[in-house]
Image (tube, rainbow, N blue to C red; front, side):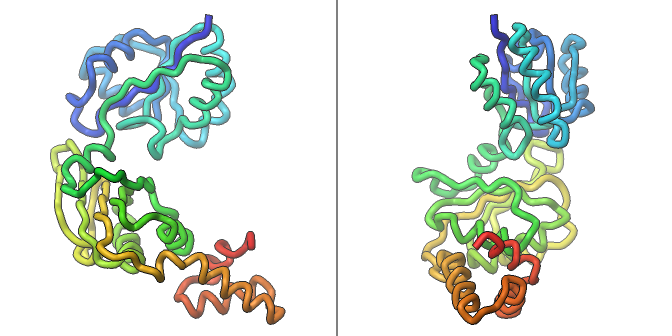
Amino acid sequence: MRGILYVVALPIGNLKDITLRALETLKEVDLILTEDTRSFLKLQRAYELPAKRLESFYKDVERRKEEKIIELLKEGKRVALCSEAGTPLLSDPGCSLVKRALEEGVTVVPIPGASAITCALSVSGFNLSQGFVFLGFPPRNKGEFQKKLAKIPLDLPLVLFLSPHRFHQETKILLECLGNREVLLARELTKFHEEIRRSTLEELSQLENIKGEITLVIGQAEERRDSLLNFEVDLRREYELLREKGLRKREIAKQIAQKKGLSVKEVYELIKDY
């Protein structure tokens, strides 16, 4: 008899934001996979959960541990997959394990709950009737970030996570690519220092020394920006023109970088597969 893989949402800050069903599931499973065992122990103590076998399951080890976990599930074990906080797989480890479990015929059961994404959207005040776009954490490479932004529909709200250490740099890129759009800054959601602030990209790009976990909701554009939508098309066109002149990729990257104000490395990463 196959086991069950439960995908369990945990609180994103306030420990009271956990469902009765999640607590019941965590009491009954044979193994709990968690991105951070220290964080989970706080929840365990708060609700006097029985001592369970905990196993760390973060990005650098998930593929290595996957086979063993699948075997346990095939043996009939019940396993809970948890992120450090919030709903698993939303910019957190676990995608490969869930996919493999489904392929192996293992029952996968979602235990819904808190998510920084839905939490921020619910207080954003933006029209979500047509949907929204979720980007997770932006690429560290400026050129890759610009390329990703060029592909998104501008008539939908955009949700992403920002690191406080890169907040100033990333909000400037967003301002440069998207224009001065209205935003909702949701910082330290459900925690003691929670901040919900309606602002603009221009105002946020001027902030310094911001702290905490940040979810940013960017409102839809009032007008479509052709220069952004055609970013990749223009890049490809420039590449082809320079290629026809007999230039090599390194030389092409250098010329485009000078023109667009990017680093040669960033441009080369964008054109290396052309």
